[in-house]
Length: 379
Image 1 (cartoon, rainbow, N blue to C red):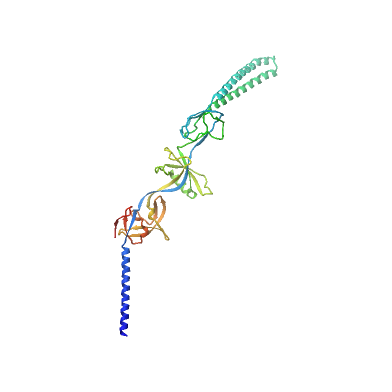
Image 2: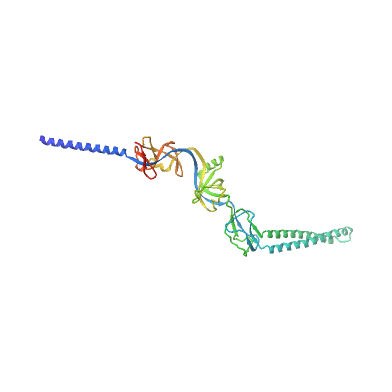
């Protein structure tokens, strides 16, 4: 019986020893895990001037677009420009055969000359017969007939003068000049064609290219902010043009619509760009950034540093001993690849931008290069 008790006691002691060794091994394993160095990418939190932007989609619009129509009917004799060419205001575009209109002007002038002679004769007769009327040698009715004839010839010469002016104007209409400076579109007529006055199809359309407008819409809830900031200073707008070597032409807001669209809840704005380099084209869709103001001392961190959990947004901050701390943050807004931090970070702190999945509070980290090689570690 005593030997059995001794055996049982030996078994229990061996079991306790094994359990103790296992716990020791687990603690050592956890210790090694805490000492593991995780390679990460980091960035330094900065404090700088950060613009408050509103992103939107817009459309470039010609400030002035003119459809050219003929005001007289005739045969087109000449075209003085090429399709797609820039034209200046007052530059000749088309010539219509002027000969029929020159003939009409000459005829009107001849009629005017004839009627002017008749008017002079009628005035002379009135002057001649007035003394005879006063002496009673002719009747009042006869004299009134001469006066009426003189008045009729006077009215006739007035109508003739108007006909001359109309014929002169029609002759001037045979040469069509550019009413604005801009870029010509495609031609719908060619020399030899018969063009008709006020035809439904324009001969050509000219779009003003510089300056140019960009029309866009923003949420109506921002209207008060937009009006407040515009009252303080002109609002700047940048147009983001894809494939234009990163060009971002800048303009100013010149128009705010007088009503919020109830169907979309947006307000329409227009910005004017000088477009001297023709970076914007009428009808082109562009992305725009409306800059309301600039926050001079914003705390800025990379967007990649901000992570999201069930408890909200957070970042991993690298401490002086090379370990990381999980820090809750509040993001005010994002601008491109940068996040403006409302609270939770200070300028000069280092945050992890890549490798967060392997991190827990207290983990040691090593900053690695873009190629993925660790370049340093602190324990």
